[in-house]
Image (tube, rainbow, N blue to C red):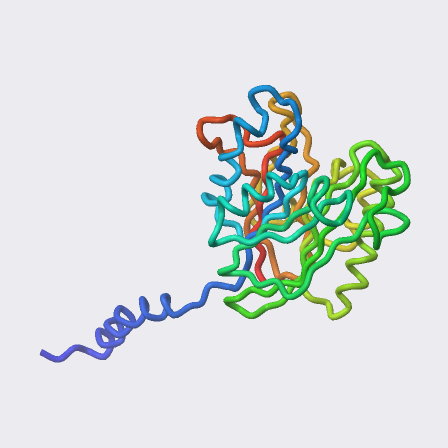
Length: 281
């Protein structure tokens, strides 16, 4: 039996359409997370690090981000995550007090199977950013860690900066964010895609947010799929949004999510919920 031309055409579509669909490439992209892990030496009762520490590693293994910008990670927390997440993840960062191990780290945790680090460094949010120092009216020494990275699958290069602005000094937050935006412009003269993660200790409406709002996009508000859940929970006693993923040079952000899922039946893995964004080159 011969098939009529119209049937032959329909049959061709039937057998070629799945092949055509499967041949389409998924757009190259990366998943980036910002996570204030809460220092291990804080007396948080049953929420203290000694009771909740496994949940941080379990969250990363469950969510599988390509990169995590950590805030408030002390050296023992860095070492725990480094050991718990080996062999998939590696870490870069230094302690803010001495540029080595002492004090909180603005650490970057990255999946070495998907991301390679080409170079990286740290600067201090102060009038002397190239050495350990406290800036303006800050209550603490504050830093930012930066890295030039490459997506192994696509070969695309991009920059990432991770920071934690001061929780007391209003001038320190304003000047610190200005410094970060200036450093970003200086390091990225080739116009590569850029990511900025961090706990800013400011809501989006704060006037001091102007420099980053003028230079980058807020993944929370720009994503195709997003949520409006707060990021700082204060162990159930607060509800403010102060944790961010900002970006520029990427074509889009397909999804943003505040990670509220409990791990090991604990309502909170930190006093901040992680926030995560998927960025397309």
